[in-house]
Length: 327
Ligand SMILES: Nc1ncnc2c1ncn2[C@@H]1O[C@H](COP(=O)(O)OP(=O)(O)OP(=O)(O)O)[C@@H](O)[C@H]1O
Ligand SMILES: [Mg+2]
Image (cartoon, helix red, strand yellow):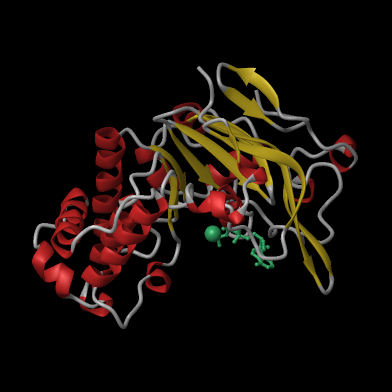
């Protein structure tokens, strides 16, 4: 099957006063149509920067050093801003990490949702829908995210809704352009546990009903396990391991993945004896030479500080970048 989204050796630097942050160091990922890929990794490892780069809204001064991104045969790096307007929110859409930042406190939900509906219509060169039509589309979107009292929600201001309802509204907005690829950046992190489960259930339902292709980012491995067929594990701007979710969770081959899972109390089944990974993620202006994980790695040897490990296939749909991958 041909990939729907391909990311190849993508390298991104962000210049700062102290030097360039080497934020993404050769990311290679691919996604088939209708598939859900989870991306996990510690805070600061570059998940959001990667997600935003797929949407052409990477950091303002970010410099692509190498690589490409191809979505549905479109070379994303070659699009200009007017071409992006026909892709962003329309073909590729994103649910952002911080819901409150993306809702305007001064306008009702209905007004904001209608604005999105109108803007997407414009991007698709449709005529502006009438007020009634706008309302019908908004109601349909709210229904799609299982908001039953859409009349109340429509007339509410963001602060009048619970966190879970706000997240549903943001998902509705992300769906307004009928995207094919949805990027969900920590869609449940800001919510409490029972609401998290409901939002995950909603996302799962949307994936199967709308045939969406999804990139779901989270540092909650449990959430990823509940929704993603495949998982990529990121460490300091590198995908260290990727494969089918059950393989990654039950038979991790990269010492980092193993440490990440061992640090989680809620993963059931076989548990490997390994204390939480000591240390913190490295400074990305002067990242460690060779394997970026080597200063924290229990298996590191001389080669690890010298040579960057090449991602290699170690089984059906299982890739690991480590000189000493676990057996
Ligand atoms: N606009 C920016 N300017 C400078 N540095 C940035 C910018 N955006 C991100 N960074 C840096 O890039 C690195 C990756 O950040 P990113 O937000 O992608 O991490 P993350 O994996 O999403 O973390 P979290 O789990 O906390 O959301 C961090 O070191 C961060 O400080
Ligand atoms: Mg983030």
